[in-house]
Length: 142
Image 1 (cartoon, rainbow, N blue to C red):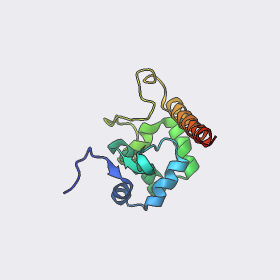
Image 2 (spheres, rainbow, N blue to C red):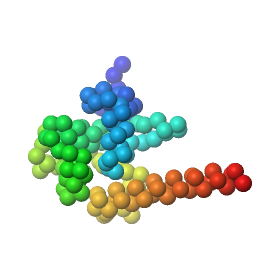
Image 3 (cartoon, rainbow, N blue to C red):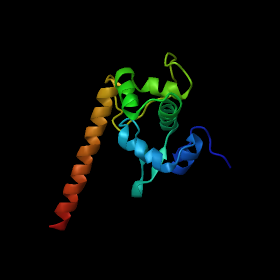
């Protein structure tokens, strides 16, 4: 039985759908701060439909358009996530998209932030949570 279009995808399902190996998706997560799949216990990744759209855009830019990793990073910085997603749709970036862009920092307080500022805040929050987890582990060891 096939999953619905709004269902979350595992990393193997996402890799198969995009036509790239799983390790490439994990590598892209390290290079592109805007790729943020949900992670569950044990580090299992689940990709939302908008995550698949972002990954499709990155794949199109890297593989079809010939961009470098730094080129895609610069494109995202200058033109935003919508342009990256549009590349995956075969669009020139001018169409509006109906996909909601979710991040861990989505809230009414961050709704007015630019994509770049939001991504920096999400990245900082992730770093702070990692530091807190390490400190908690050290305190348990005392």
